[in-house]
Length: 67
Image (tube, rainbow, N blue to C red; front, side, top):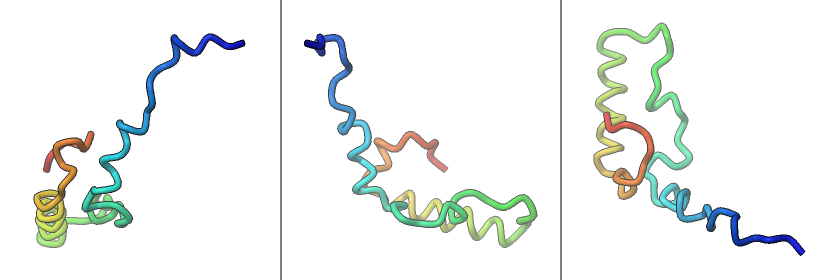
């Protein structure tokens, strides 16, 4: 019989925050710019990403840096 006492605990608690994340299901292009994006277009994308993050219920648990 396997000794499971040394296995890590349930991992679900580390990922459950994603269920409440405002970015869930969004295209990553909303947050990460393409190489050719410049000036006002880039600033608009950044402002939109910050607005989404600012309203997110899971942002304290999110492993990504705050914008």
